[in-house]
Image 1 (cartoon, helix red, strand yellow):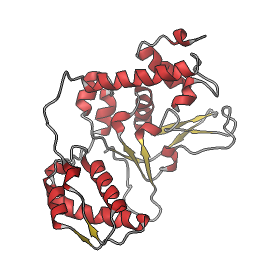
Image 2: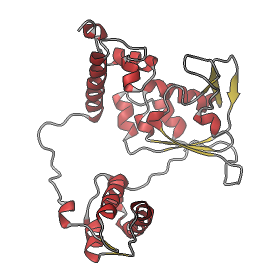
Image 3: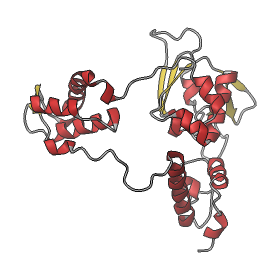
Image 4: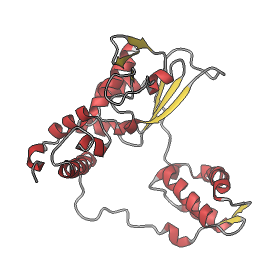
Length: 273
């Protein structure tokens, strides 16, 4: 958590939630009308929208290095840059960031900036994994059932005892997101007022790794390289433009150029195929 000034609860306090992976290079700033092709109107960035309040950056560990630099600049200078303008805007925000990754390992692997880590890690709050707080499962179950049942058009009034035992004995390797998935699926498939799941949903596999293991950062880089190469193949090596690889991947051209260089991809070999 990166604190700022008084951002406590209040009727005029703003709260902005966003996935860190979707912030992009323009997520920390805004653009003026006509700043670039397609900018038909002025748009507030997420940080400016949260001015005077709090912004929550989920999955901060997935942020690309280029965007990490932009975020660090905002945290240090408390200013955002306008695209298409020669002025900057001062923002007063509190930043909450969350991740389920080991950021120290990411720093060692070179995928997360050490200076950004220290800037964000002012007030660290460690939340134990679901397997370490089994006592929370009954309350979480009730909350999630109440959340999903109306959407599915179901009325669920109680939880089967055996099902509760299954939920409490399971290790939940996917943590809270796996719990959400299982509860939502069970609610959709429910045909009565009792929430229940089959024992087969919780088959426990071996915890021993099978075959050679690949360091997490290397595995991510390999997957990213395959995605970029596939997009380059489809676009015949073209980076920008409506049919370029950047559009296909949904990322800015500058970011794609940087990742191509960082991953050692020869973009020219995809031309004229």
